Length: 133
Image 1 (cartoon, rainbow, N blue to C red):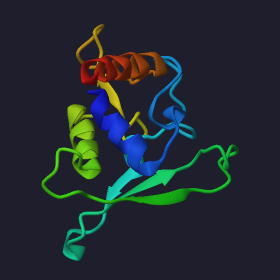
Image 2: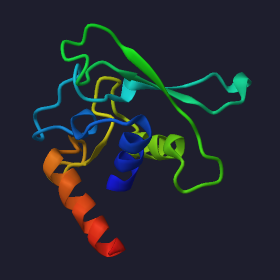
Image 3: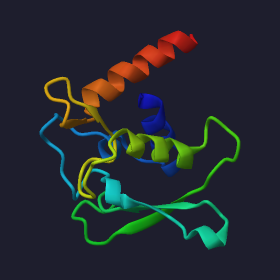
Image 4: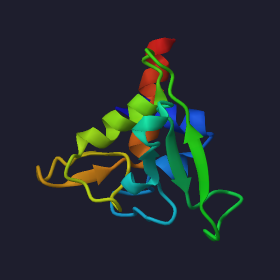
């Protein structure tokens, strides 16, 4: 599942800290992307653009303002970041708006979602890179 997070980080030029947490219990709504940070443009516009609210970055370390960045769809492509976000959010249909944007079902309990950690992200990314060659 790390492919979705890589696409989002790549197209938005984000750091690993924006899409992952240091540890499972270290999610910080002000620093990490949450489910509520992704919003589709109204359907009548027909653009399919998804807007992402970024509250924390290297140049906004105190969360003084919210930076809105468009995520542009790539129609009919497996590399479409908008579709990737939609699929990532669909994994946890019962998630609350302030829950981590990127999480996966916990191995401890079915009702709990675990945020994607730095370690899991890097480990899975290394495995993908090894497969590519």
